[in-house]
Length: 389
Image 1: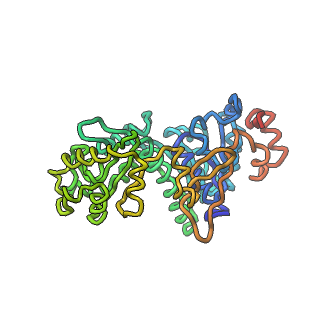
Image 2 (image 1 turned 120 degrees about the horizontal axis):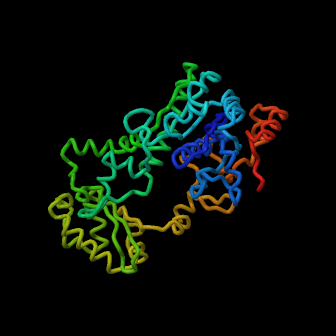
Image 3 (image 1 turned 120 degrees about the vertical axis):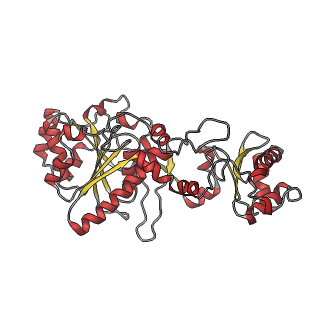
């Protein structure tokens, strides 16, 4: 059960943002059927090729293995589409059409279908068919140039901005919006989610600051990009790090007090940009005088917008995360829990990651393909089961 209970989604297996969007939908209760390549069942450990190394993104849904270059494999996808509300694919533009599972073919059998497309550059335009990865998409939106320290090259923010925030998350939002429209109009549509568009959208607030003259083009000199002494990460005596995010004056006053700097600096000069470099150097000097845990004890209960920088292993054990259940263990793998949280339709603990083709027989039957047809698909090679199950 969950907020999306009853929603049926077909996921044409891919990488990164598409699986992230489908994970989010599955976490919220949708029935997501992952269509893996038939060849994926041949992996040495039985996991689908496309889930290395980000396999946790594939949690909570069943898998069928189909050969989309076999006419019966394509016909099977279209048969599944008849019962689906959503299809998600992440091919380069034109590939789904060549395979015979593009929007026109799918809408011919199910006009209400929401067809979600995940690409880097979008479905049209001069770069639509160019290869790329997160770093390339965010480079063209200003997001990468704005990220990093003064005098240093831009710092890639992992692949959170293009792949997941501007990609998969925005695709999920677009799919839900299109479903709302289909509910009232009876007509599905194509959701063209491009990571370059999504990364740009995430930068909306910073474009606003720029227009108001409150954002410098010089990286690492602004409020939120490590320019401000009261909004940064600092090394401690033991080589670990802490953060302060004391944007408001009352929190800044608390930071100065705990650090013993309230006699050197006043709150009134907090936003004097000319003083920031020298003040940052002083903050760095003071933070290096104690270990991370000593600073944690000093700041506890002081309302100073302070936090230690935790490793992945430390994060899952922090009391706040333990109390909230921010991380869960599924099939022996610790991972983030579903989010957000719902008061009336809570999301269940996600199911494990399925092997490619683990559910080919049972899932096809559950989706309306009769036993004889399933046997014929297996005999022809258009469908495969996983021998490791």
